Image (cartoon, rainbow, N blue to C red; front, side):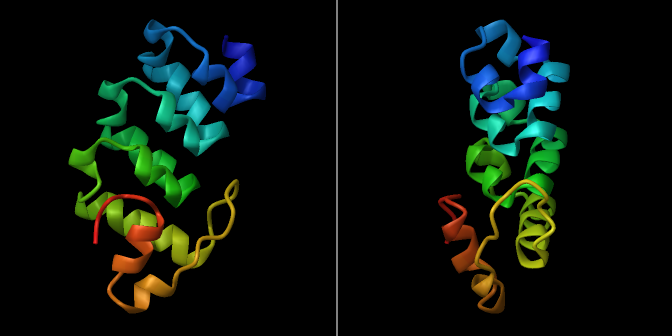
Length: 116
C-alpha cells in the first residue's frame, strides 16, 4: 500500500483498510501527495490539527474533509484563506478568493466547509 500511496494517494487510501486509514504516517504521506486524501482518513485523523493544516496548505478545499470541530478553528481557517488567496497550493486548482474581501465567508462557503 505504501508504494501505491506514493503513486496514487487518493485512490490508494480510498481502498485501504480501516487500520491503514488510521495510520498517521501513511495518511500523512497520502495527504502530502494529494490533500484531498484527507476525506478517506479515519475520523481520528480528520480531527488531527497537524494533518489538517498540512492538507489545507496544499489544497484549501481539503478543509471540507476535516472534522467539523476544526472547520472553525481560527488557525486552520486562516491557513485555508491564506493559501486560497495566494494561489500557493501546488497541487490544487485555483480557488476563487473573492470571499476574502467580504470577510472570507464566501470563500469558506465555496470550500464546502458549511461555514457562512
